[in-house]
Amino acid sequence: MNRTLSTVMILVATVAIISVSAFLYLTREIAAPSININESVQSLTVDGEGEEIVFQIEQDGTTAEYNIYELLNGEDKTVIGTTNQVAGEIALNLSDLSQSQIGEIHINARTFATDSDRRDNAVARFILQSEDDVNEFIIFQPTEISGLEGSASVGDSITFQVTGNLTVAGVTQSIIFDVTATLESETTLSGHAQTIISREAFNLSIPEVPSVANVGDEVTLKLDFTAAS
Image 1 (tube, rainbow, N blue to C red):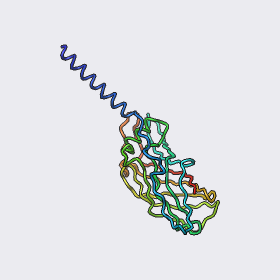
Image 2: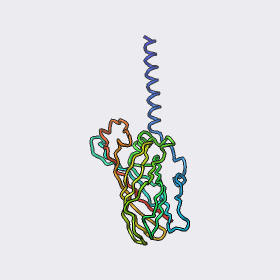
Image 3: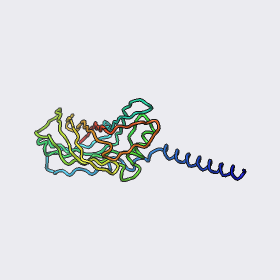
Image 4: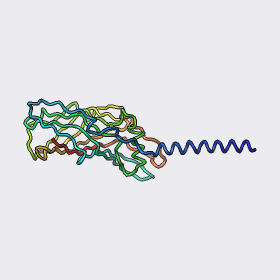
């Protein structure tokens, strides 16, 4: 009898230790960014004698956002995650917009924040797998700009599309962003870019959570940016 009781107590203690360890792992803070976001991107190469103005995305005034449907505790909810940890460069040729360039856009996947710290940790750790160094950054590599033509001057707004390769958690897919940009001044460019992607296309699996009955497949991605020359 004593031996049986001892065995049961050992099993209970073992399960408790495992449960506590798992809880601590699941709820611990996500790893901090490994480097300054601006250091993660390479500068655009432009003709020194050309007419391009290079604008660098600034964290102040910039927000990258995802939103996705979630059935949480029996209620419909739109989850919105945001971060200002975005970097990249845009080279505008104001006299011939077709000669403009957009460099790689990097977003630190560890830094998205919603209305729940637990969700943030789960998204960063298990869905975006951002604690793996190779997945720390969501990367958009433009391959084509469509509809950008003519010239522009201060105060003008221009609408165009950018096709490129988006890499999330090690999976790369070609997507198209609809973009509107405004030349606020000779030194400031602002804009909005938006697209919709399929979560399944990027193999973004959702961990099983009792309170979450369903998560949508469509993810809306938005980027509101301010860039300075």
